[in-house]
Image (cartoon, rainbow over all chains, first blue to last red):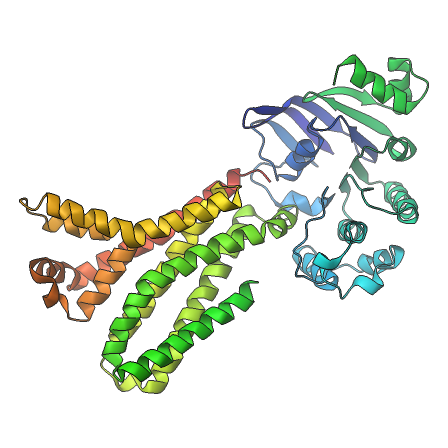
Length: 235
Length: 248
């Protein structure tokens, strides 16, 4: 589905990714983990073509993404911080994104799911962080694309929306989609993900199931397993 | 943001056109006064709006970048959106009062069209330059600063330097140098074009005669427009090129 070969990226003097090799197979939920500033978002943005890598190859569904924009029709992306133009209304934004991609009726179900009806006529600048994140989720999930990338999907959500989000992600997985998630909420990751990709100092440190990680680090639970990687590497 | 300000800009030109016509009571004179305003103001507005629009729509740009749209279409779309709406405001804002005043029966129509054409060129040029500066500077304050400096340089400082060079090397034949010097600055080029079209080149003495010989001919006119087009195309190409390499 997504293949990344020898990916390098430097921001100024800061080497963020130094030779990432990763291949993500079809179907399932993959959690990309790592300490702050380890390059998770950079990795994801490289796949989306928003960050141009210094070196390396990325293919999505067999297509090289270099100088290509069509492949993004196959990806739904949830950005980390929902920065929307503040003078647009929620309704206008949803309509505009639909015009850009393709017509869909999925949005009505999602608006209902996240109880967004009262906000449809409000301007995005006046929404709270959590509500913005819900709008963000609607925009991401309303297209039925085979690959879904979620950068910190839980940020700002209340408990009830969090449960709805988990159900939503599980339902998407059941459709056979490939879902990439980054998160710092370990319980959330543990609950939903099938496989972990751990990035450390710009490289893939670990890739495999949670069970495998626990055996590798000799820790009984997931949170401590992650913590032990970080302390062992002085990160 | 963009639409509201372009209405204000439109209203400003409308008012300017009406006031100038009212005060001058003569089309040709109004055209000359307008030229002085346009030559300085159009580049300034183009620069400021270009930078402001780019920085203001950064969030929106990031949203669009994750969608299946080509980068070049995103940035060219934004550029054309700003530049064309500014040009529209200029053309309509000045055009309407002049048309009502009886532009079409007047001999000043060619001068006036030339004024609008160069005004449009200047808008396209300076908006493109502003976008270039904004693309290369993450820091808004720096971006604004450079943009204003660029405008100041081309609108004011360049002339000063140019004049100083001419005085300094006055013992040498300078026709060619001054011609080239004029060509290299879009503001100077536009000013010279309009001045000579208005047939007041006699005021400029010998240089005026040389300029008249060059710019007054259709060859000179074509070369000037080619230069202005180059001034548009170069920064636009850099927008496309730069935006392809930028990280978001």
